[in-house]
Image (cartoon, rainbow, N blue to C red):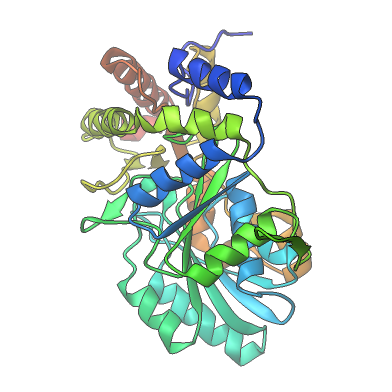
Length: 383
């Protein structure tokens, strides 16, 4: 087996995280406590939100959003297909119907034209009451929200920002997360800040924040006088061990984001004259959780991934087209061709290594190998 020398992703971990864990272990308090509260304050401050609620994963955060909004059977939730299926899965788990929306081919973010079309189809076919739009800021590029917010207001829907990949991202200087009623983040190891697993909800709505806090902790409502269980809640708490790691990671966030942006700029330069691919949209506020280019249809993405792996380089699909998943095809009748952009991005998207510590020479080596692999696949008459 070839040794991986340039992985697709690598978290920025060092002695600062080790010392943070030691601090928590020495305190004797390892469940959700002061470290988690401090981490919440840091997240809220970064995203200019009144509240942050840390939880066990980004998926847990999405699930709590649905529960806090009382979304359930008979409701419809509009979700971009080209995204990890957490938002769709969580909708199914609360009994709602996920309605997939296609994305824009350059930003990979939700297409407002298709959203309007899908809302009309939902109402015409009586597929459910439109309740929410989940806006995914894919790979760290903030979605243009103007028209989406207008449609949400027109049809009395809530907007939840899935900013799992977009910690620290902004649009026009405004941080993501609070344009709608709630925003969610993930701290998976591929993200700019990791706690191993973990997530957070941000909101400016006091009632929603209280509801999420109750639901993440077994439905408990605590006061100085008593403990009561006021809802059928879950255990979605974040440990103080995770939160301490997150606080140590936050100290590195500016340099991590700067490193990712520089790597993306180099990839864009390396591929600027390469035929056979479409490069991702670039934006000064993009945080580049993933760098994904899209190969033309005649090229075999999986063969290129395998060839890179032979050289010890990690690469792979950028994400999935959730509407192509077996559960959504069998249960809701989706077909791949219904959302062609999402299907194309899922089958032809090629994600390349992006992480702090990736050297410029390594970026160049990755780009060279991709170009060579494309040339080997290119029909002889087109070389």
